[in-house]
Length: 113
Length: 112
Image (tube, rainbow over all chains, first blue to last red; front, side, top):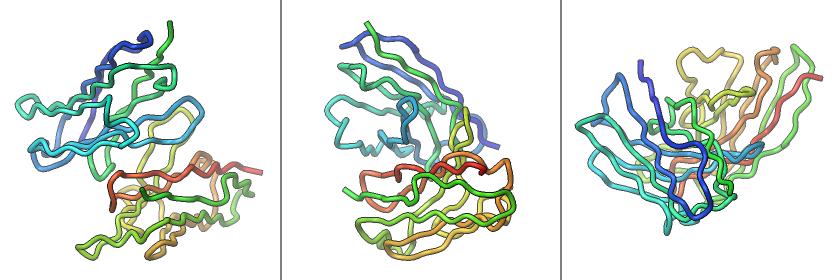
């Protein structure tokens, strides 16, 4: 069984940087790709980024200038950074294993002054 | 970018009756390897999304057989043969064929 556990700050101010990390327990880390998805309160799902175990990345063009995804295979972890936050970035952020068969519980990130 | 359009966006259903959700893609979702990476997710209130169906018609482990997926190319359907109370939630289709990945807007299933 695969379990994803994430952590990071839940309350940030405009212009600050969001930083989230997702740890993977169980299954094969190096044999998979990993993703971040977000969901604004009361709205739908938005794919943010993906990274392969070898570090190959893909980003949502709408966020590409502000987002970075990275992987640490030695710790079975991957991370998300999103810069220049605004209120529009307020959302539940989920990490998931590609092809989206395992998800984390999610972290609510609120951007407010 | 690929756009996925779901219909209806709201689906009131009587317990025990069937339900059907459509997902239409702005481009073919057939990948160069011959597979079609169209998946369906269920999100119950207050929970993370859960994958129900992968690659159009394959049920995930533990998913009741009242859920089925079908379709090809650009038109896809999720069917619930007999809706139960635990099926209440929002259902999303998602494409994993093209970059960037995309989700449909979601269809809210509720009990009449």
